[in-house]
Every structure is written in C-alpha cells, then in structure tokens.
Length: 219
Image 1 (spheres, rainbow, N blue to C red):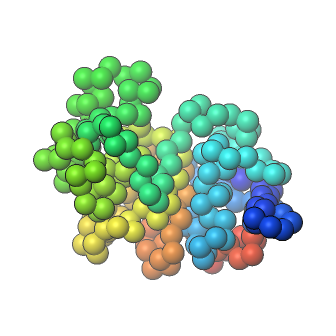
Image 2 (image 1 turned 45 degrees about the horizontal axis):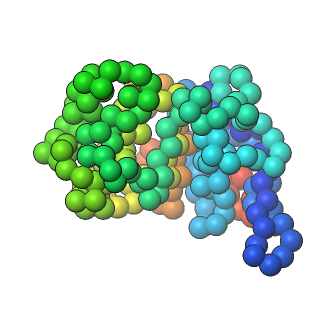
C-alpha cells in the first residue's frame, strides 16, 4: 500500500511570497488498485507524483510504502516507476535499450534484460522499432516506449502522468485494458494523473480532484 499522510507543499512565484500548492493531502492506494487524480494544470497533481517518487521533498507530511516511512529514501531505492508527461526517454539509447534500462539498473544481465524488453515491445506493437533511436519515432510511439519501460520492472508503485495523452482513441482503449490487467496481475499500487474524467472512471476504482490544494473524492 502506498500512503500519503498529511502532505503539504508550497511554491514561490518569481516575485512574491510562498503560496500553498498541496494542503494536508492524505490518501492511500492499495496494492493492485488504481486511484485517479484529476485537476487543472498547476493544481499540484504532478508535484504529488514527484513527491511519491522521491524527486522532490514535501514541506510537511510522510510517504509510506507497505507501512514503511520512505520519505527520506532516494528514488532508486523506492522500487517505483514514474512515467513523465514528456516521456523522459534517453536519446543516446535505442528503443530496446530504453525499455531494458531499469532491468540493467537492477543488475539483470544485459542479454536477459534485452530479451524481456523485446517481449514487452512486442506487446506494445513496437517490435519493428527495437533498434531505432527514440527520436526517430512519432509522439505516440515514444509514449508507448515510455509505457513499456514503466511496466517492465514490475514496480511496487506505478506513477503515471497523463499516460495516454499522445495516443489515438483505438490504442488508448487497447492499452487501457492491458494496463488494468497488468496492474492487477502484479499488484502494483497505481496513481494515475489525468485531465480526462471519462478515462479516469474507466481505469480507477476511486477518483479524487485537487481543488486549491485540497484533495476531494469524486467517486
């Protein structure tokens, strides 16, 4: 279970005093559960994901995983996967090695990591692009590479920031169903940030909206 306990965060505009971004946010995400987080741009959704991943600290509050306080753990020790809205792929690596990267970091032999990456690429319809450079792919293809990379390590928690925004409608439906099955099978606690409430209701058991820094449950 991934837990946010009384998380608060401020931001400081270029000229002015600190302003509250997250106000005493508390929510728990069970293993195998997907929770959707909605809200306008700048409402703090992505900041909450970054706090969960360990990429920036909260001003107050605690992040726990399976009952352990992980607030001070560095990102690489959390066992989470975060998919950024801008994909954050490595331009110096080909598609297969981008997907295999997390497995290599976990000290899986490179040949075995590449074999698992090839299997994952086939599931995402990208087998023909394995040796391509990521900058040669379309936006939708890059997004599928990022999704494959996020799933391949079977993380304890999956943090997704608008994961399907660059995909066409048919592929969104296909991958949405595959994601739901994958999350349930591997018992990943998943926090799904999106602007699309219809999509959120299709994938998430519970949904919340950030309103002026306060988390309000929608369903």
